[in-house]
Length: 315
Image (cartoon, rainbow, N blue to C red; front, side, top):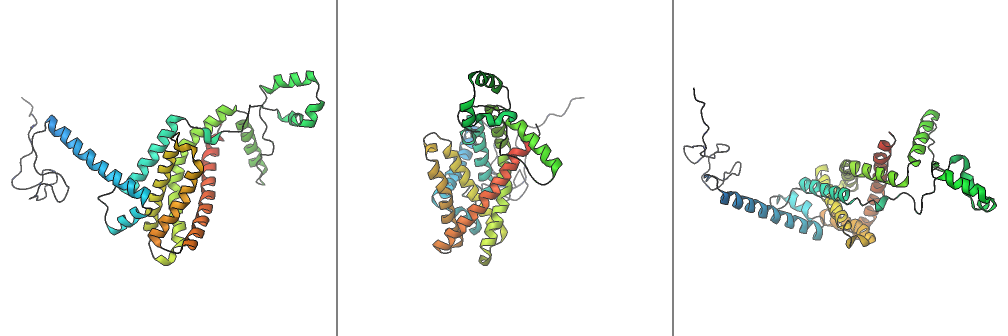
């Protein structure tokens, strides 16, 4: 008994119907699913032509989207609401692509310069002799004791000093302060590396979860505009795409030297985008941007602190 061999020819159709979805298609492309209706046996040239067509179409969308994102703050939000969507990369797809690209480049580059722990040479000090490093005590110390202290310093843990947890719950505070001592007992390079790894692992989730909060702030600020929450969420997605684009540019050595300019570009861009989308006066919008940035930075700091410290506390 011979097994039936599958056909290596295009599926036969009776009439002008799409082979993919079965809908009637009298034109070159199916009006339902978009697949081409003229199906032939695949060739190498067909594969190359198909790849080139899709690649250049995507590039056209991408460059058009990036141009609007950079040069016309708020325009992508208005275009999407107006229904002109096919010519641009969809907002959430753009956000995910830029955020993934940023954290991938950040992880590969290993750029931990923005989160270095402390400065200067590492000089760990035991908690029992923390006061021995004060200038007055150092001046009175004998040479032999200084030599012995130097030998012990290489293995003694760094003390948390003024850093301590005091929530009013003694058992919790004791465990938390013990974890903090364990963290600070690590060498500075290892502690920085652990914080950096945790940051790159949790920051994308934190940024994504903060977008709905950002949209809620916008909703409260523009209640009289009558726009629904989805419009503000769309604005938040586009604005965060711009943030990741700026952060990507900051990873370049030449552009990274102008950190202050890049930091200033974000609130200025937000001011321009809000005025384009929602209107409003210059001063009132500027005051709202300042308040929004303040609240958002505080929320970001809290989320990132939890994202970094909670996993490290499991040492």
